[in-house]
Each structure stands twice: as C-alpha cells, then as structure tokens.
Length: 356
Image (cartoon, rainbow, N blue to C red):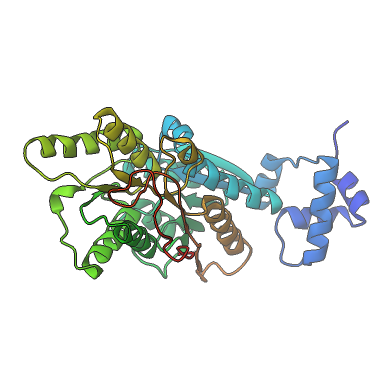
C-alpha cells in the first residue's frame, strides 16, 4: 500500500501542511519538528512525488553532481566514490536526492551543468573540481544557481568551497622524503587546468627550496592525468632519460594515488630497486599495492559531506553568504617509502607527522 503524506503527518503528530513545509525546506519549521518529520518519512519509507512538488513549488529537492571523470575512471579512482558517499549521506539526511553526470572535458562539464539548470532538474550543483577560469562557475554565478566546489577556486570569496590545504600537505610529504635522505625526487603533476595540481606542485617546490635542494626540472613531469596508465608512462619517460645519461630519482611523489600506482608498476617492471614512492588521496586500493603505498589521506568523504552541507545551507538561507571549509589531511605511512639505502626499512620516526 502506498504511503501518503497524511500517513507521515499522523506518525509525526503534525499536520500534512507541516510535512509539506518540511519537504519544501521552509524556514518556518523548527529544527526539532524537521527531524521528527524526516524520521517518520524514513521509518514509513515515504517517497514524495518529486515531479508534482517541482511543478507546485519550483523545487526538485535534488542536487546535481558534475564529475571530471569517465565511468571507468570513477570506478578505478576511489577518491570519487568516497567523496560521492559523503555527498549522498549528507543529502539523504537533509531530504535531498542526488543526480550525477560524467564529464571528460571543460566543455562537456559546462554542457552538463547547463543541462541541469535549463531542465530545472536540480536545486543546486556540486562541482567535483576547481578549474582555472572555470566556465561552469561563471555560468552558475550568472544564472543565480547555488553551487559548491570541491577544490579551492580562483576567486575564493565568490562561492562556497571545500578543500584540503594542498600546498601544506605536499610540503610535509616532501619533507618526509627529505628527512629519509632523498634529495633526488621526481614529481608527477596533475592536469594543468586544475587548481589542485598547481597547489600541490607549489608545495613540493617550497619543500625543496626550504631544504636548500636543487629542483631538477627534468624530474618534474607535467600535464598529468589522474590514471595509473599516465603514471606508468611518466615514469617510463624518466627511465628513458636515465638510459640516455640523465638522472633517475631515488623517490617519486605523485599528485594522485592512481599515478603513484602506475609509478610503482613501471619501476617494478624495469627491475629498478630502492625507489620510494608516495601518493595522494589514500584511495582504498593503495593499502594493497606491492609495496603498500605511503600516501596523504585527504578525507574524501568529509570533502563530499562538507560540499553538500555548504550547498544545502545556501539553499536554505542567504545565497549571498559564501563559506569555505578546510578539511584536515594526514600522512599514512606504509612500506613504499624507505630510508635511502635501506630498502624496506621505515627508518626513524618524523615526530609522527601531525595532521596537515
């Protein structure tokens, strides 16, 4: 038997109009009443008629996600799944549905964002990336559609966003390698149009400068992709350079765990021993690589949860007030990093590497 709005009202001890106001996110409803009604909705398994409510009140109670990845990349790179989990949990708790779309380029991301807005299928949008001079952000601002971003944008005060302190996190990770005797360190960059890529590269350069170590530009592989295939090819290019008389690093830092996994495969495939590798994001598979990957845990679920929370706040309240959240990241020590000359040994503790 279909559960009706009157059934929910009866169970919650309120009127049907109060249930309707809760579903439409009316500010006239107290937090206690809202929680009581949402609890009744969950217990009864009530599914509101989203189409009818959209026609009546101009709201869909849906959030649209724009992902910078193909479906295959989404499945391989656990960062996206974990961040989406955080979004979904927050959205569900607040009575929102989640829609998501894949985009392989800035143009495709803009087209999908425009589709959400023109079709009135969502109340707000979460962008899972922050591009330089991002056309999606510009479009959403002009359209007056609330949105939030995972990643620090060019204009920090003009929108809601959540991120880690990527410069500081990468700086500390590089210091971790340097403290273990590594001075010849390669760095694998992310996509050049992503702000996170430049922020992390800045942190690496700062660590090398602070340690008064030369930055070997030949060991910085630019214009990367967040895939293991790209990581493999990047390290193979370093191996070819070494064969031609160039320098080969004792350690490799990657902007992303998938790149780092590809780097491990390339080093192992070439029979090169003693090269330490450190990744970024702490995706689930990183604990099961050979050797297990040392990496930075960016707390991806918290990034997603906060991105959804900031958007929902904007939908409920003053759309002219923008907030941002910095999520704590930590270094996860595993066996892919060793003291130089002591393969497989962890060496001395670096004061526990505090949260970054």
